Image 1: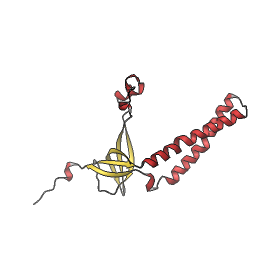
Image 2: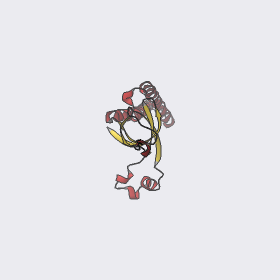
Image 3: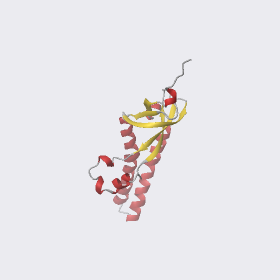
Image 4: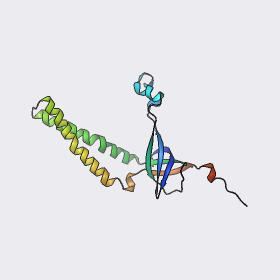
Length: 155
C-alpha cells in the first residue's frame, strides 16, 4: 500500500476530499545540485496542492490529518495503461507509415493517429471502472484530530 499524509477539506457520505502536498523526489537524488528540476523544487515551484477523493469509513471532520493509501498493483496497472498503451499505439502508427515508405510528415501524422485509439480506449475504460471502490484511494487512519474534539466538558 502506498501511503500519503493529507488534510481533510470536505466530507461526503462514505468519502472525504483531502488536500495533499505534491512533492518530487529531487531531495533524494544525487544530481539535484546541478539539475534544473532540483532548483525549481528548492524555489518551491514544484510544491502544489492536490485534491483527492478517498473512501472513508472513519468519522472525520474538516481539518483532520489522515493517511490515505492506494494499492501498489493498482498504481502499476494504471500507470502501464495510461502511459504504455498510448505510447505503443504511437510507435505502431509511426512504424506502419515507415514500413509503407511514406514521407516524414505522414509518419508523424500516422504516429499521432496511432496515439488516438489507445487514448480513447483508456479513457473509456477509466470512465467505466472509475466508480469501482477497488480503484479508489482509501483513508487508512486518522493521524490527528482538531483540539476541539478532544475537549469534553463534564458537569
